Structure formats: structure tokens, C-alpha cells
Picture (tube, rainbow, N blue to C red):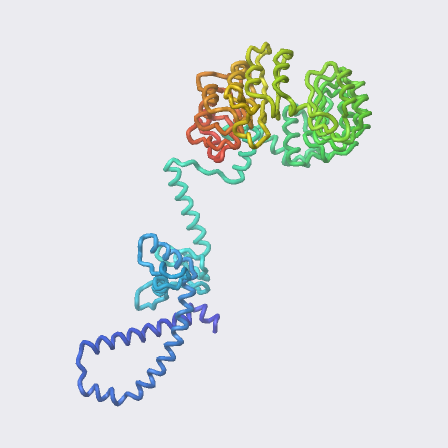
Length: 584
């Protein structure tokens, strides 16, 4: 019976409501006719004769009325749970309509809610009103005519009926298309798909912001990286593409012994493996066996590189000039000593990092005696010695010594100092006989005492002339840009909190030009805003990347980002990838 009633769209609640409504209409009509017309005696006699029958009907009507009220309350409660009821209630409040539910305790049972729910109850066909289907009932779709089960989420059609799920989805898609067209007409920026946006953000962090489609070479390299497990040989691929492939495969953590053999070529003198975490000791020895003439070795996270493979490299690789090893903790001090004795005289650059169990002070002294041709030395995060890439103990005397004795530097990095003052940095770059520096990293030079974070002072004197901020400040920035601005290519000044807005506007005023500057990092310099950004774009015509993490005053709204410039770190960076006209 339930299936039959549902299939024929018959509702017990609706039948009861229609019946009660007919009774109410009949009573109202009788009352109106009684008030307007005089009853004659014959009718009174007839009524008196039928009193007993009327009493029986009244008893029956009272029981039926109580039953009807219970069903009606259930129907009203169901209607109050629907989305259509909540929508109409919200609209009535919004447009100032009468809503007595504001006077109740918020339980939704006020007179206004009751009246609204009653107005949404199903009507019969004689009233010429649209029947409101309740969740669980069957209805025909207004557009396609298909019969479907009504749910609380059924969408209303243009004529007031309900739509089936398929038509509801099509109507939603059409609405989105109209909104998108309206936004495009209004001049708003189109939003890109989420997957494409994520890849674009990743490319921007790597400095790749070329507008338009990717080059054919770049697309081919990415495709090769996706199917690298099905490739047997890279062929005559140039070294720069091999390096790009190594970066992509290392990022995806898929550089395994099988894929490593694709990079072992007799015609290449460079091997770059940015993630050696999945390589074993035999794989490292295989590298040096296949590439005995290698001149540049770069092995990051080489946790399985041991003494045997390192000594084999020292014997086999007679042309080795550049060596970079990371996390090679299984190599002993004896193996390091043998390497420096055999190949130290020909090394031009040496970079070692994350060494926890070796490379003690006596080994470093041995390195200094045998590696006499070194042009670049980097020892970072080596536990048994002072970190050569950090300057925790550097002070003003260190900067004065650099100013006096270092006159042929091409790169300068002083980071993490909590004692160097802004005055000392300004003195370093004033009348310094050293040529202009292409690379400069003066990041994270600040006072570590949080009490003096905003106004770090070198002493407690009350004389303003003796109070100096810790780290690079306004005076130091102006001095270094006067000294190296013409040749500077990369500038890293992040976390230097005492650089003022006046100094930034003076240095990047749009009139002064820095023709070689391509990479700037001003993250955590709170004074950077949109005006400074605009000045940077005007003063640095070859700028490719600008990092502004935690610079909350810079939002890109008033600064038009030129085409080909990657601005990373803005709160709304995905809306400001490229705004210029060039390059399209």
C-alpha cells in the first residue's frame, strides 16, 4: 500500500489536510450565511429535530479535529526543516517582512514561523496553487518530465516546480557560466583551475614565470620525467637538460638505481644527483667507474656513500675539480684525509654539509694545507667544527677586518650575527677598495633578545648618538647599494627588521638603476609596501624574482607586476602572477 500511494503521489498528510480544509471552509460559509440572513421558523424546527444528530457529529468532529491537528503539526515540523522554508524566512527578515519568530527564543516555533510554514503546506487543485512536495515524495521534473524522489536539496525550477538531479546539475552549471561571463564582462580576473594553479605556484617559487604556454623543450622534459621508468636511454641530451631532469626526478623522489644509469654518460664531465637517498654504496662506485673523467661531482643526501666509494673516486677521477657532498656521514676522517692528500691540490671548490661524525678540526687543518687552489669553500652544519656559513660571533671588528684585508671578493655572505651594528655595515661598504659584489647575502642579522626586538641597542646609554640598531639598517643599505648596485645580481636581506621605509624609497626611487639585479629577497622586512614594490620594478629592469614573505603591507594592489617577474610571498599572490603586457 505504501509503494502504491508513493507511486501515485498520494500523501496521507495531504489527504487529511485537504479534508480538514474543506470542513473549515464549510463552517466558515455556514457562519457567514447565518450572520447575513434571518432563519425562518421552519428551519429552526428542522434544526431542533436534528439536535441529537448534530451532537453526535460534534463529538465525531472533535476526535477528527484532534487527529488532524496532530498530523498537521507533523507536517509543519517537516516543512520547517526544509531549505525552502529557511530561505523564505531569511528573505522575509532581510526585506523587513513581518516575522514574529524574532520574539521567541530561537527555537523556530514562533507565530511568524508557524504562519510561514502553514502557507507552504500542500493545497488542493481547486486553489490553483502549486503543490509543494515534501522530502520523500515523488514528483515530475519541471523541465524533462522525469519522475524522481524529492529531497531537501531538490532545486526549484523557473516556474516554481522542482528539478531532477540531472537537470539541477545542468542548471547549476549554466548559472556558473553566466556568473563567469558576467565577471569577465566586468573586468574581473579569471580564476584558473586548481591543478594548474598549484603547478603555477610551484613554478613561481622556482622563478619560472614566463607567460603563455611552456616551451616545447620544457614540455618534453616534463613528459620524459613522467615516463622515466619506461625509458632505456636519454640519447644525446645536453647537460642542462640532464640537470633539469635530475631536479625533477629528485623532487618526485623517483631517482633510483635504475634511473641513475640513464645519467651515466661517457661524454659528460658532470654528475648532479640532488637526492641520493635511494642509492646504495655500489651505485656510487658505479658512477665513478662509468665517468672516470668527471670534473664536477654533486651528490646530495648521500647517506650510503662510504670510504670505499670515496677512495675509489680519489684514485679513478683524476680530473676532479669541483666536489659537493651532503649528509655523507658514513665517511671516516681517514678517508677524508686520503682524499685531500691525493686530490686536494687540484680542487677548485669544495662544499660539505650535514656531517655529524667526521671532519674534525685536524682534518680541516689538513684540508687547508693540501687544497691550495681552492677558490670556494663551504662547510655547513658540520657538528665537530664551527659552522663556516654562520657568523654568530661576528662583531664590528670582523667587518672592519674584511674592509681592511679583503679586496678581491666576488661573493659575501654574513648571516645570523647578533652583534654587528648598522654603523659597522655602513663603514664596510664606504670607500671599500673591493670591486662591486655580484652576490650579497646579509640576511638574519638581528638582536636575538625579544625585549629589544623592535629597537635593538648595543648598549644601555640614553644618548641617542650612541644607540645603534643591531644588524643591517637604513645606513648600511644605502652604503651597500652605492658600492655594489651597478654589478649586484642577487641581494638577500630577509629578516633585517631595522631597514626603514625612507631608506627603501631612497634606494628604489625609480630614478636609480640597477641593471644587473635579478633576484631580491626582502622577506620579513615589515616596512616594504606597494610603493616600495613599484620602485623596485622601476629601478631593476632585469628583475626575475622578488620574495616578500611576511611583508603584510605589500599586497600588490597598487603595484603592477611586470611580465616575467615572480613575486612570491604575497598574501594574494595567485592573483598577481603577471599583470604587465609584455611577453604575451
